Length: 115
Image (cartoon, rainbow, N blue to C red; front, side, top):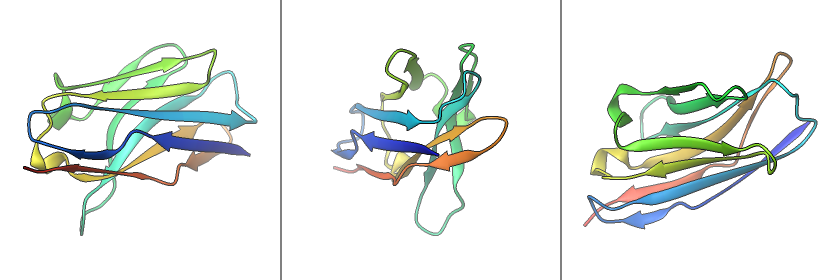
């Protein structure tokens, strides 16, 4: 079992920045992928970015150049630095952990971009 605890969401004006954090605990495999997904009202959940234990990253086209994913291996924590936020980035952001056996989700954190 893996527990994911997210933090860092909130309300920000267009053009602003937020940093999301997700700390993983429990039975963490040495090879895994951690990432962020988001789900806006009435839409399907979509990948925002993910990062492997080897440091390989993957981004949605809509966030490339604005968002940066990183991880602290010692703390089993993944971060999502979000810059130049747009109203269309408004969504519930979910942390995800997956390995060769299982996948887990965090509880979600709301990000609202509005003036």
